[in-house]
Amino acid sequence: MSLKIINPATEELIKEVPTDTKDTLKHKFDSLRAALPAWKKTSVRDRILMMSKFADLLRENKDRLAQILSDEMGKPLNEALGEIKASAVKTQFFLQESEKHLRKEKVNHDGSTEEYIAYEPLGVIANISAWNYPYLVGVNIFVPALICGNAVFYKPSEFSTLTGIEIEKLLIEAGFPSSIFQLAIGAKEVGQALLELPLDGYFFTGSYATGKHIATTVAPKLVPVGLELGGKDPLYVTDQVISLKETAESALSGAFYNNGQSCCSVERIYVHEKVYDEFLGHFLEAASKLKVGNPNEKGITQGAISRFEHLNYLQNQVTDATSKGAKLELGGKIIKGPGYFFEPTVLTNVNHQMDVMKEESFGPIIGIQKVVNDEEAIKLMNDTDYGLTASVYTSKRNRGEEIMEQIDAGTCYLNCCDRVSGYTPWSGRKNSGLGMTLSFHGIFTFVKPKALHLRQQH
Image (cartoon, rainbow, N blue to C red):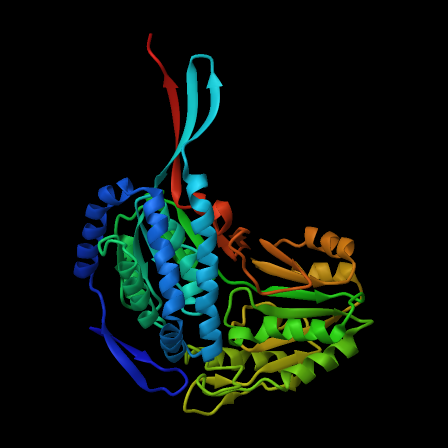
């Protein structure tokens, strides 16, 4: 069996890659398990040095890697380049912070007994990764997992397989043993086969439906499960902002960067009625300048939709909204091929009876709704099954923080949106996920603590 890698911008075949079978996956798993004892004995400092080399290799090979990513996933070349650069930066957090957090720690001296906490790797873990940001979401997991001493069974998405292959090559070139990081190549049947192996943890980035399936399937194993899932991320513009033009441009970037194919993309916008008309004017002016086309062409802001079947999903959201009274301000249609393209779409006169304001879009579509006050905005922002990120724009910091305290989301932004930092935990609430990555919390995700009570005999 082979996996056909298709360029979503041209519909041309890039390459065919052999897929794994249950037998090859079992062989790779046995290799990972056998390599684990020696890898656990490798010092944290040596693992960090290898990972530092990996980050250097990302920077050195950024142009070649960006082209591969753009070709197979469809994002503009400059965005692919930005993703690789940002991944190297995010990796830096783990290079700086891991050693001190993984050090055995003396926590108490109780009479004749000393008490310590030591940290041990989970073992062999699965990293079932995503296609929309394969580097950025990948380094959230395999970087700290490897530094912590785990072996990693990495399954790239079938829509970013070539990027997964490049990640493996760079890790080996950086000094990681080839037996400690193995690829699982294929589509959902390969992912399902991983769930049947006796792994020591499962870490997935993707949709709520798949995340729920993974969690319920592996639940009897009683092993750690981390789920970075979707979002229906709201943004609220209050009536107190210094520049509505800059606010609109920031909101536009949050909604349409990477074609909206991001779990933390802005998916719905609420605007205070006092500034609604002016904000909308600036937003539509900026949106009209977005340029759809071949990701390799200069000036393109919107590349291809990565998955062909998602085009009809987006079209159905537009149809549902307009049939219920929404006004189509911009876009709204599939662009005829070759390639999988959808027009940047702005809908107004929307409400929560429409799918576009309730169900994840994961594409270049945004609904903008007028609200009368903060209370209405907060109620609508929380009216979702998701809880990943939320944004508030206001020149009054106290007001912004008061609003954010009432939002049930793992990450809140004041006067910014759609960003991730290695220093803060990345976690979702409700259908947006389980567990966390990044920050020191994201280091402890990949270890199991051991309590040590040490008493000297006399």
